[in-house]
Length: 327
Ligand SMILES: [Zn+2]
Image (cartoon, rainbow, N blue to C red; front, top):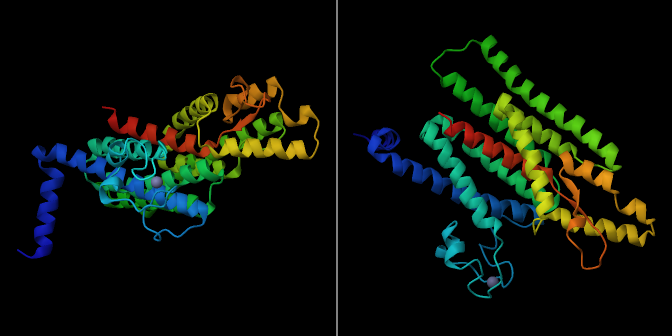
């Protein structure tokens, strides 16, 4: 038997043997957590304009290079007790949460489809969605290049599945499928566009950017009719995030910068701080809220701007996982 044939038979054994079910699920979790760790590193370095490869992984505070064991997803963070082993600076909780989270989503998808093309086509898409969520979290921006690369991956993956599926599809059938996928994507984008316009008008400033609208196009194309479940979930998550005032959120920095700028410009009080009616309107759907429930050190109420991208992506991941786990 040639090497290639041996590899194929090994793969077939791994992908189909009933006694290897837990190995398959475990491998899916490990793949998801490793990719989450890699994507987090790339997205952060990209956001800061640093190289992806140099320097190697290191503590962002003391710059000490990390050992192989410290780099193991989730376990590395737990082994160090959530602090750098060298300088004891806390390591952000988002690392183990994202690694475990993407691992669990991969596990859910694999439990449905096994290691088949239906599972594998999701891998690049989910990595790009995580990249977008992180970039939005860190910078309040959703880069078009990555959004459209994700859309391309969704369309290529779905086309591949249809073409290799049991039913042979004519060109007309394929075009119809494309129209349906992009149609649900366009509907989701339109929904976000209208919602953004309404909220922006009420808030007197941009409440939901065009980046979110384009991300809606990707999610609608990916999830089809389930995208509306995911949008509803995203709105609830944005509300929760705004209420909880999660630490490390770029919106908090932006909000305090805005307040500072307004103060420097000598703007009257009422133009700097939205009134209660506006604040509650913002809270409802845009993911912006007045964080006046939490007393500020200065005694001044502040506006927390919540990036909607991470909520959209989290809503979509939960929807995908739930769909995969349903009987
Ligand atoms: Zn350190």
